[in-house]
Image (cartoon, rainbow, N blue to C red; front, top):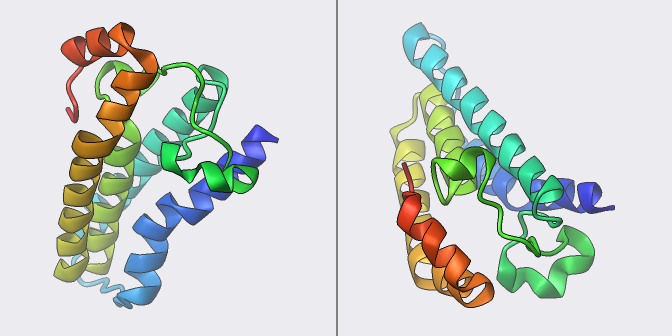
Length: 161
């Protein structure tokens, strides 16, 4: 059941940010004239998708939860709940926020394959929102929830890269 809720969360949040908005709302057209940009774009998309899948599985297996944002408790019937245990292994050894990074990298890849600077600008805006949410909301919440162990993790692991 948690796997199904992880899939629902993925479709609602990361796919909206990285696929649905850039592809359907911004409505770019794929331009196949610059093959190098398209190749870079697809590499970024694959890297972003692999990073997201890896971290979502870490949340399921190690954290016993889904990537659901902590303030989405009213939607837990649909997207599950945040992990009950801090996840600090896998990609979390290198970054405290690999899910956000993965979604950002995927979105940048969308900008490259569509060769659309507006999508790249959108990706930068999304990253700014991610950064503000992490600094102002998520990190204080995790410090309160996990205490000293989270503070030790913060001292050892960079926020982004």
